[in-house]
Length: 308
Image (tube, rainbow, N blue to C red):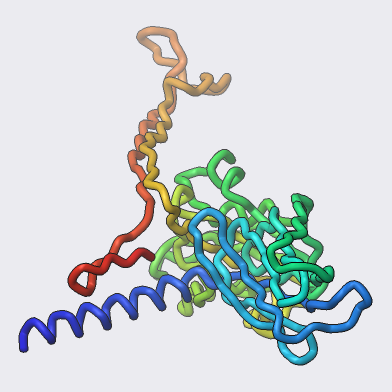
């Protein structure tokens, strides 16, 4: 009895964790139509999106109007394949989804054998045709390489167009977060989301602390005519997504240091009357940390290993 309860609890835990991981990274989608070379719509085509970094596979079938949609996709690079009996297999690589991306990829199938493949390599940026919002993406490279005071990622939001930091929230709040206003919006008029979930402190309507830079994949600042799903606040929407795992183990260690010995002496610095030398400001700060990532292997039934 105890053994059965143990495995039942394990199965429920794994299913809950699996759904949580899938939902947490649900930040983009791919949609479009499938047609033949004459433009006739093709229902029943199997459309498969494969994330090349993790091997995640999502499959749908085009409906009676030839349309398909693959929602709730994690960010990253993808390969799209479309198959239908009597037609050559269509494959497109170089698809990179960023946070809140919603590209339309229409597919034209050629008559032939399924074993024959028409492969398209598209490394150019995808054109967004379904959103009228104006957005600025801050990707991993800029998050890690741009200088940050205290490594507070929230400050990078001001690099988006028309975004300014006015003040820091009251000390009575849960944390001292920057009050950022976009496109002339009022205080607290920016909505924040992390991995698709609300990330706003309702005490002052400012952002809750974002993950430190090494754990953050990217974020996007959007304003103007946003979709209904992002219309929580009148000023703008900041959507951030954390890094997901890969099929290989990887990690890093870091130390960020600030020391007055590295700074040039100010011309107006105080002069020590004994030595006649200008006195440096006393600033000594060291921040250590590291990251580790990779596949997660879960064993919930005897003899069966499962990977997320």
